[in-house]
Image 1 (cartoon, rainbow, N blue to C red):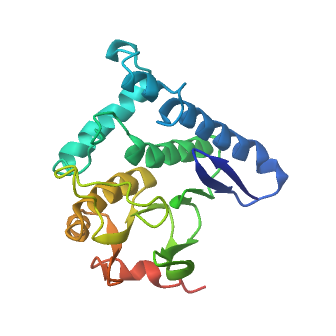
Image 2: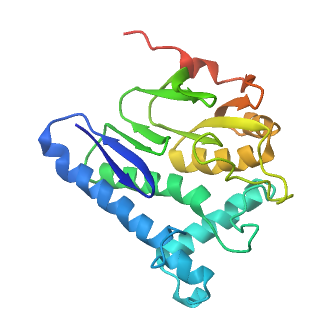
Image 3: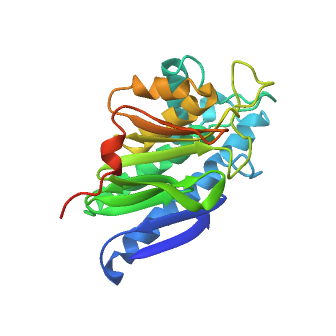
Length: 246
């Protein structure tokens, strides 16, 4: 059973093999994403992150989830030589670069807690694929209706950072006057979507050197397309593109 809804400003798809009996599990996942949106959306006046940015909420009163996300953001900043940074050029906090992958990962845990072993969650192109082997397409950033690579992944996360959907929304935190625009897309495969997403965001901000950052991360692979349409992949990426034999 497969269902798509618009939440968090993007299409979110949940697929669980089975019939209508899995509807409750699908509904629970969408309810969770709605909760995340209400708490972390920088576009909602009523969200917790907006209250923080407006100085209406002190650190002593942050929710447990907010504390966890901000802690993970700080950890990721340290692990990426400050290329992952949630402080915007305007000085506000925007943890979106971590929240999406984190929330997909948490939603996957909800399904596992309900005994669901095979599922696929896709939130705006960031994916957690569990149980069986799932096919995941990488879009051509210059021609979005075209798939340039098909991946075959199992029990893994696939995250893509790029400018072709939301424009130049990722910046180089070490030079906020220069947008990260020398590459068009960077797809990262990792052990889960939380890990893949946070490192994809940081690596994209690095520009072309980001592919080498992923190359040196154990358990991660990546596929990069630069602004000239030239693709570069990490050394272990190739096997993910080979269709498994039946």
